[in-house]
Image (tube, rainbow, N blue to C red; front, side):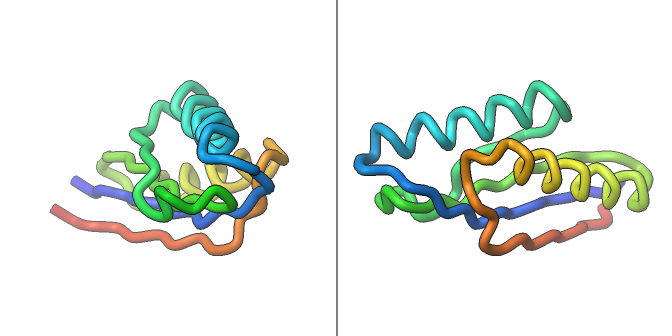
Length: 94
């Protein structure tokens, strides 16, 4: 079993935490619906201008999961609601 994690550091314009919440909610919700992955905001919770969002998936083929994470990153970039500043991938073989 392989556990894959994609952590995206996002930056965007938001005047308040309420504005930020709507951006993060859109990114997380659309990614969950499109790719059937787990997703959550994991860092920069009090920063209205940025967020760190993590996505997780489990499978038995690392190459498939690598492709999934790449397609997911491209999808978030195409949403054009936030700029991806950093992307980090991790794979855990269990």
